Length: 310
Ligand SMILES: Nc1nc2c(ncn2[C@@H]2O[C@H](COP(=O)(O)OP(=O)(O)OP(=O)(O)O)[C@@H](O)[C@H]2O)c(=O)[nH]1
Ligand SMILES: [Mg+2]
Ligand SMILES: [Zn+2]
Image (cartoon, rainbow, N blue to C red; front, side):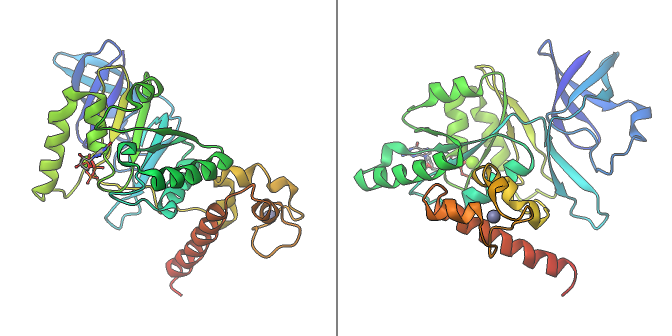
């Protein structure tokens, strides 16, 4: 029998069977030795094969993962924690005001999504608040990320604008939301499925009470037939440990052009005949995207130095 993992605490799991039944599950003894250098070998979003033994479900095997998010464990054991697996799409929630979202944040999230091979969609929320000036700014954002090739949607979680289109996009898929505090993630989840209201509230309360020694991701099934991963612990995707040489691969508009650079190991910084710099100069790649590339690149170099103890 097959199921998807909705909760994973490391010792027990909550799974939802393909028939829609929710069960508590444990790993079958033999699997426990199957250590995958991870504190939780079975993660939220994993597709598992299980058998029933009386009231209990025993997980026998995991299907191959399409992708997964990890973070390094807080202890020093070099173990990694898998936050969630098999994510179909990431929505970056953006508000142009109340609060202001910066492109530096968005570009870092997008780099993370590319690195984890999760398709990303930009979701502009609170469009009900927009005056003429905001609409102009929105236009320039849309132009910037159109050049990068990203899909973009405009919504208002409180006014219900664009929510049906979003539901259609989420139907049958596992989605994850990212965005600053206050952009409307919780409000949006409630707009997508009012039934979930209580559970979202519970998570925040639990969080506020300060017992967050460990926080676990959770997979919510939405009434209209989509799923979302709620990750109380992480706000963004930062700190994907990557080789700085591959950073430009995580900018789709750079990836598409770098074969035209003179040097095949071009970093698009000081090299002559660089197709990326030419595209920036021609306005085909947004300047902000290129500057954020440089900024992430610098950070990464600094990070490397620091980790080597310089
Ligand atoms: N005008 C307007 N306000 C909105 C909209 N969506 C959310 N808000 C308001 O924005 C505030 C913050 O919304 P939340 O849903 O709590 O934001 P969040 O992203 O969950 O924030 P954190 O949980 O702190 O990460 C609330 O007062 C919402 O009512 C919208 O589309 N339009
Ligand atoms: Mg919230
Ligand atoms: Zn180049």
